[in-house]
Amino acid sequence: MDEDPTVSNPYVADLIQQFIAESPLNTMQDKSGEPAWESALVGFSSGSDPIWQQYKEYIGPFHWTPWEVFNQHHSSENVSADQLTVISWILPQRKMVRLANRKASKFPAEEWARIRVYGEEFNVALRKYVAGHLAKVGHPAIAPMLAPNWTIVKSQRFSYASSWSERHAAYAAGLGTFGLCDGLITAKGKAMRVGSVVAKISLEPTPRLYAGHHDYCLFYADGTCGKCIDRCPARAITQSGHDKEKCRQHLVLSRDYVKETYKFAGYGCGLCQVGVPCEAGIPVKAAREALKRGELPPPPPPLA
Image 1 (cartoon, rainbow, N blue to C red):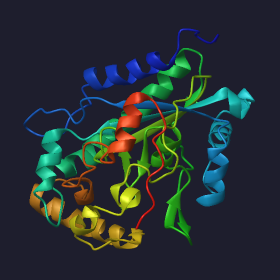
Image 2: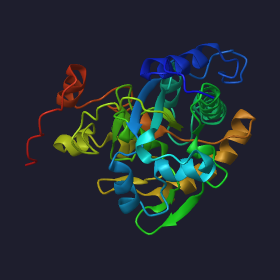
Image 3: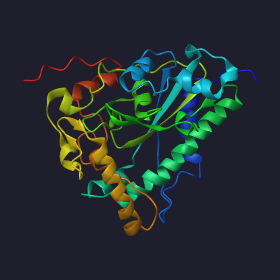
Image 4: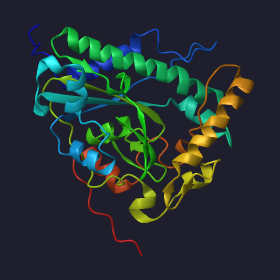
């Protein structure tokens, strides 16, 4: 099939927004009939961006580059890295979900647990839809998280990691930087979920309007905040960062709580994503204002 020249950055962004607005799968699966998601932030990165090789060196050799995951499943295409684009999106948590989880002190609010299960089911459907639609118009694609060989890997540096990180893909696409708790702080905040698709298409990369991977976090910007430390019921966050194993153990406990309390099979936490300055936006003023202007922010002052 010939490639469709009308496929552009706005075309893809509109494709995602339309599916969110119209799909019957966008639901919390409760009596309220409320949707799981209202909108998305969308960003793009090149398959030949040097950052993918940097990830392999920093995260581990098991972390795929876009070229690796695409060619594992579309080997007949014989593409080069610069023919690929990674499409990433952020699904910000709705205000009512954030407010509900702010009240939680140990285990997630029902609304949050529903988003973790049913909202992510929609995100899976969105990945499939974007990849399938692009393929139909001449752009073979794959959602790395849905690849049958995607796996979680034991990591000496990070306790565990995976073949493909949605948050790192979003960082590469200019959508946000990491906080003290490892969450991705975006223009719509840290309370969100994220997805991506790798496609054989050349689209304009989204500028990364940050100099470092912690630029949007107040703790790293000026030594203040650290509110996520107090919000964590597992004490998995300290000034040294995020203990993934403590976090994982708490999530295991949350399964029983959700099943017994809310009467469905689910889990979650997300307490560190709400009730904090980065819940729904970028708290670092200089970075927030620079993003609005489409500029790199000035370097932060040295810590005392």
